[in-house]
Amino acid sequence: MLLGDLIARCGEESVALESLLSLDNPALTARVSEVCKLHDHTLGEFVALAIRRYAASASDEEWVTAIGAMGRTSVPGRELLRRSLIWMLEAHETADGPA
Image (cartoon, rainbow, N blue to C red; front, side, top):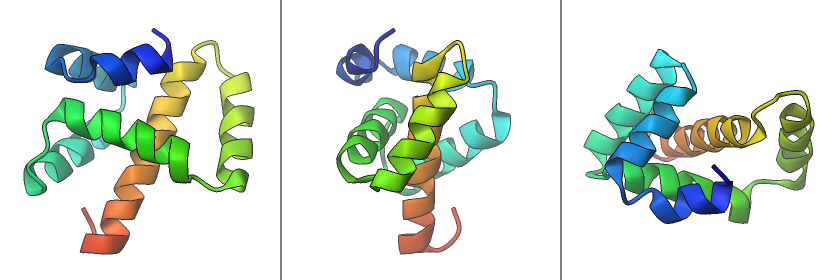
């Protein structure tokens, strides 16, 4: 699935959950779920928001790193989703204390 399609379909909780679970990272999934509960977001809202904010606000250095990591994987969209979520969680931890 293309990233734009993922953003558009994240209102469907099943798509957001499937995308998150496809990362095969239980610790990341737990952190995302915790922040969603804390801030009253649905999983879909959080996933879409993370991708949008990353696309709009990540530094040039972060993007260069992301593009390099995406080039080393067979599933670049999954890598970008992973980086977007981690970036968003770090922003929440900075604003609210540890998630």
